Amino acid sequence: MHCGLCLNACPTYRELGLEMDSPRGRVYQMVQVANGAPITESYREHIALCLACRGCETACPSGVRYGRMVEDARAEIEAHTTRGRLETWLRQFVFGRLLQSRALLSVAGSMLYLYEASGMKTLVRALGVMKLIGRLGDLEQLAPSADPPFFFSQIGRTFPAQGERRYRVALMAGCIANVSFARLNEATVRVLQKNGCEVAVPEGQGCCGALHVHSGLPGDARKLARRNIDAVLSGGFDAIITNAAGCGSTLKEYGELLEDDPEYAAKAKQFSGSMRDITEFLASIELNRQMRPLNATVTYQDSCHLAHGQKIRTAPRKLLSAIPGLTLAEMRGADICCGSAGIYNVVQNDMSMQILGHKMETVNATGATIIATANPGCMLQLQAGVRMHGKSQRVVHVVELLDAAYQ
Image (cartoon, rainbow, N blue to C red; front, side, top):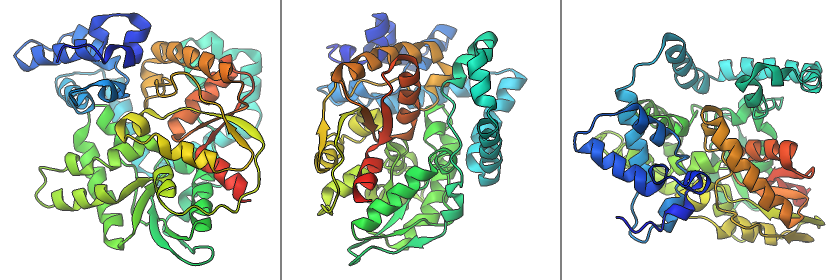
């Protein structure tokens, strides 16, 4: 396809105005490589600079599945890339061990908590130490906070419905979310309970593999998918719930990820068919309306993998509109990426911050005091945006506002 309707939907093209950093330009490069052209450093850079936000998929009238294409391109690039020892070890540690280990995540979270609770984090920022160490200092702005007690202790538990049980659901607790968004997971459980759900947090679950897929490691993602399917599918749940839109997009695509696996293909398809984003699920049932007013003006930022990956836009807005006293002020370009995109804001920090700066301009223009979204990664990015460019707005998940209204 050559129409170019995707160009304005692409954050990197909007920033740079370069054809080779647009979806159409990247597809052109993929075709050349598929026809035998070498994988050059230029090709690597153009593919790496893509946020994989999938905004182009929404804009494309022909349904080109660009997200799947860029993931395959990154897997091919990864297979033909030789890295230095340090980078190789770091990638193996993060993707192969840290994200998959409750123990290592707990240790990392405890160290982060000590760094914050001791006052070292405040002191380091006040003295401007991070500004002296270049890029690492820039990345410190994006570091998540530890949120003890960690949610790992709740995995394996079942929480009863409040009132009549209408549904039995499973919650995918994630990996880093158990450390940095433990209170969000707890709020998710409470909101589901308030809406007649018995909530199980199945033992044996773990990282969904989204970061692995986006980083050109589909083999590792398949191993994690099999683990989650084994842990959850046999429970006979009415729905499998996630509060992380980025994770949910991959969890819903397990059927494609394992389509060539004779043992898991059917089970993966069944698993994906049961997956629901928390906003999607709550908007589809008869919502408990017994809420107290929250008198605030809120603007909503669409998570890319919810709006473009899962095609869910109305559900979170429907939930926000159901909260008494809350005023929803729509921002311009709410579905344009904030620059988070998994680990993109770490590996492509300059472009990520450029995109975030423009996003905060549209946020500030709404006059809202609260920024709501539906993905933890977006929350971290927007929190950094508020610190750098904002007006002291509070950044929350949609579910946290519902939880506050139910208190």
